[in-house]
Image (cartoon, rainbow, N blue to C red):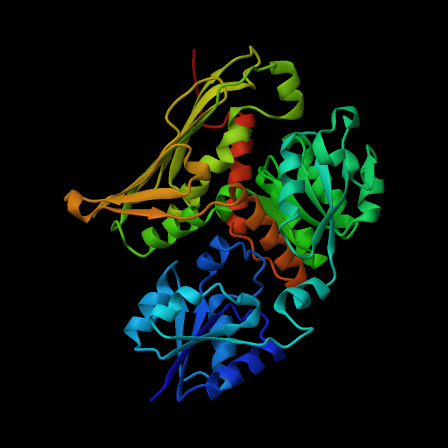
Length: 446
């Protein structure tokens, strides 16, 4: 029996894929098809894959051409697979000519001519491009502009800012530069809002009313009722409203949650998340914008707590130290959450410095994510016996921003919210902001 193996992403399976598989099938008696996993595709720069791994496997299976389907998950797996399955022929499209000659040491390598004029990338590009407008003044918007270049089906049309004279980098070259929000909304399909927390609610609401999809930096609103109202408008108008918290789209963070939910450290009994930074503070200026320690860092720090323990805590308390006499700008804030069977705490500050780590304690072991945990590509699962400890590494592209934009564009194209952050988590973050602003359960330290 002659065994043949081939690999591919097989996203949006098309005629070209099928013809290639048919020719591969004719090379031998038994065809093994390797479908690349999402994570492996990301390491190769393929972040625009539209279908999940399960959908892509099912599409290959439905062709009836594969005798066996496997998942390609890591660099160097091709050699392992050739040895494991006793493969005689490795084959792949002619656009890879020469790239896999190193496999000739293990089996015959055949490059097959591809079907001209059709590819998954072309099919993805043929979809209507989503024009996005940027809202805000932060230099962070330069990162958004840069990361959008990697996302098929998305382009930045312009920016609305009340400080156009200080625009930086490539933002100056955008087709539309305006301080008129209505003008921007007329020209785009969606907006990415990274302005001020005090402005988010009104800006999101106006965009939704104008029929625009919204990706808004957290917190979306400063109380739960306003947050719920925004989601209600989005649902009624069949629009996408997503909270922009890039950590939620970090591959390492996503895998950490899956491992813990799968019982890797047993039952979670404690979570401690710390996010701090030292910067010069202009209280009057920062408060006008709504940025203080809790709004700047609180949503990120609360994310793993609400995603692992849920949003129905039994009680909580906020402990803050303020810079201003009116007690609005917190130099440092700690929040303790008490659940029925677990506790959690966050420490956030823009005027203090601490080790920005995340520690999740369980009944069998614990997860340790080193600083800065909110943009990590690495974490450890540790046990009583250190021999059993395991380290996990995942490539981090664009600090999670790139994957966040991909999820936003997919959500718009599929008319379905594919956010990594549940609505109840977004609502709870807004509720905590309201508690802080109205001094509910707040204790003050001098």
